[in-house]
Amino acid sequence: MPQLTSSHVLIAERRVKKFDLSKVKKNLEHKGWDRERIKAAEALYRKFLVVIALSDEGHRVVPPTEDVFTFWRAHHEQWMDYYEAFSHAGIRLVNPPLRRKPLIFRMGYERNLRETHALWRLAFNEEPPCEECEMPHAALVASAEQE
Image (cartoon, rainbow, N blue to C red; front, side):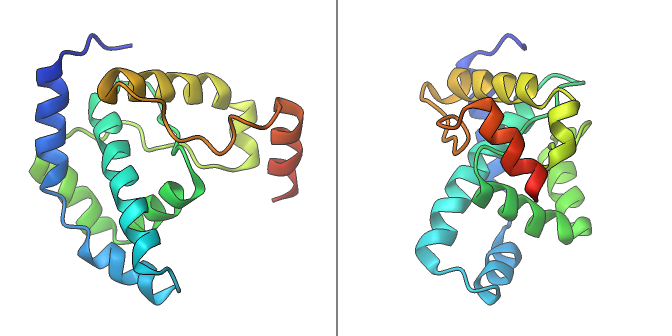
């Protein structure tokens, strides 16, 4: 876990603020998302990007909700914009976020989820959103294996 100061977080937030997500939002709107959902997902996604910026090399971050995962996928689908945004913001993208799919349970998913949540708490002094936190592990694995 990196040693974070408020200045690390402020720098990361300033860099993430530069990301132009208008194409992503338009893409999600075409997929049927309403503006309220897009706005809420964008706010969480920007925080998720801050967590990516603050993460240590070797740490795989986990999107905290399905909407953040979908927002990330929509951003990643525009791969040139995606990598250019990170590059222009001066954020290294060493390890891409983990997918929210079955194999991740065998690849340290729970550890990475805990580390992502710890970074979120350090950066924002709040509990991260977590759809999975209410589910017991056995139910989580079963639901992931059905996908």
